[in-house]
Image (tube, rainbow, N blue to C red; front, side, top):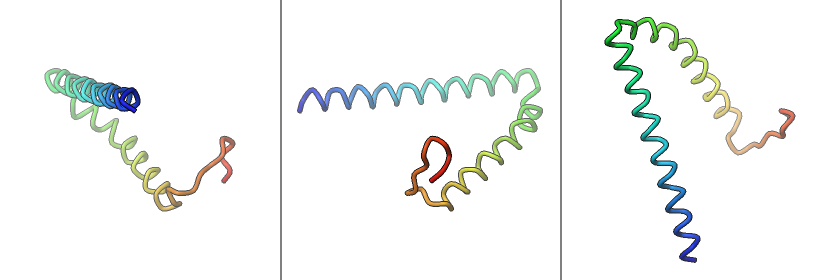
Length: 75
């Protein structure tokens, strides 16, 4: 049981560390773009993609998160 808990703790640490690294990377890119004066341009390009991703997520939640899909896309 202790081995299982240790593995779960290590897994949590790796996931949390990955999220922190990803957040730092996004922050660094935002600062770089801000200094170059291209942050507004990047926002203009990213806005449609973000909206599409949010629409897709909302559609998946409306369809029901409990339903499972097979690999070929059918339910």
